[in-house]
Every structure is written in structure tokens, then in C-alpha cells.
Length: 70
Image (cartoon, rainbow, N blue to C red; front, top):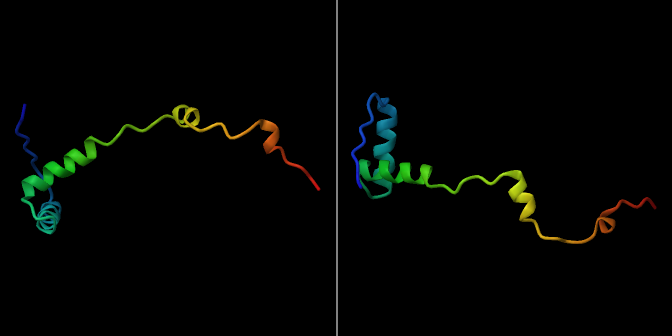
């Protein structure tokens, strides 16, 4: 369900930057605002370090990575 969102007290420099970006992207300031909000809020959630480590492939045995002095 669509809802209206009103943002007050936005600094004029921010408004001008939004309008300029909208012009560069060929859309209205309102459409640009929606695109920015969507991009910021629909990002994939960050994975925890445990999830990153668990996703790493098994590349060998521990002995394969031991340091050898010559």
C-alpha cells in the first residue's frame, strides 16, 4: 500500500542537489527521492563474520598452510 511521506526542514543545498541529480537521471525530484530511499533501504543485509567464514570454500588441510623455514 502506497503512503505519502513528507520531509520538512531540508537544507536548500540538499534540495538543490536532489533536483540536480534528478535532472541528470531524467526524472522528477520526487521520483529521485523515491529511488534514493529504495536504494538505501533495500540493500542486502550485511552478513556476520561467522556467515562469511562459513561460506568460504575448503581449500586444503591445515598442514598445507604451515610455514616452513628454509
